[in-house]
Image 1 (cartoon, rainbow, N blue to C red):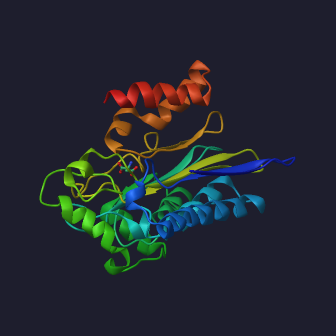
Image 2: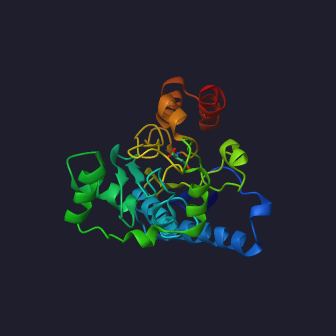
Length: 282
Ligand code: ASP
């Protein structure tokens, strides 16, 4: 996670994540560590630049996520994990806390920047959530950039998938070679950003390839407004990462917002309530 803020008369800020969990030192070379950190830095800088020029929180969150989607190291866009069928199916969402407008897409293939597609749904359609072929057709109609399957291929994702593809299990990314360890492990590479612009509006965006070996058609929490992504100027902007199913059952992001709005909790209290007590119980 990286935070960048400006405390002038009109303060603004951006926070990004490249997925929860830690990558073990033994799986990490100095060069790889540098590359991850650089990827995060590039993303936070891109979002910050939008805010600095007076851009909206939604555009800043989108700009940061686009950079991470283009970086093969993260599980979103180009670096998305493989499904059970050996392809990439991507989910993304964006929400503007100013007016609660939102856009989400699920199970799309070959779209270079799923977060841009989600923003297109938010800004240029009467709908909030498109999935599968409909979402792909919408991308084509609206001139979103597409890429061939090879663009989304990476050896390390392929190896992660190969290790578990014969079973029914699915797993988060950044895994060990050992299948048992891999299934126990809780490591993620989904990406997300939340931002607050000079006008005081907030927004959230999340993008993911989901989980390795996920069933074809499976949709995680990331594109589900209120579960993996939520923003409301009255309360907070949230982009989640982790095993999606418990987040969906908990309606996690919206629950944090509700605890703040209806019970007057602080963000920290509401987060503790939802992540430590609720989600961990599923
Ligand atoms: N939440 C994502 C999903 O379940 C996974 C992740 O955060 O890495 O699809």
